[in-house]
Image (cartoon, rainbow, N blue to C red; front, side, top):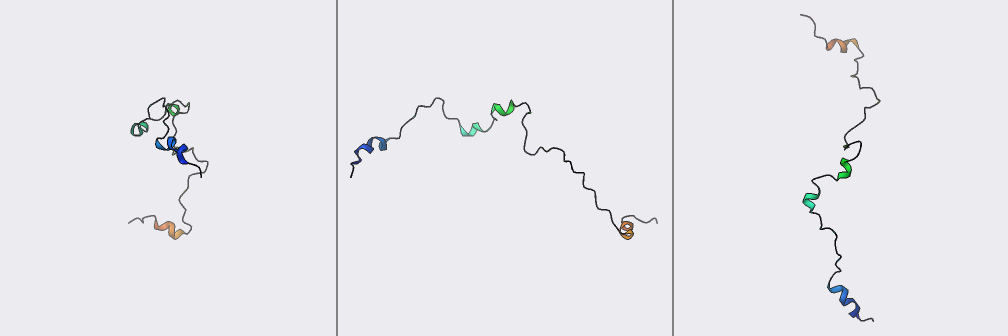
Length: 77
């Protein structure tokens, strides 16, 4: 069995990497959108913007029988 002495140097302290920039604060990182989104030629588009539909507007169903049509009209006194 191999001795564990070769693991002692790396297991005691994790390696530290020099960071070029300090870590961003997660509380302030989400307040402003990245500048790439604001610079798009189309502007910022949200998900709920829709193109006008090619379907015609739904019309209310027309009553088929004359009795059903008569019920919507109030008779003259």
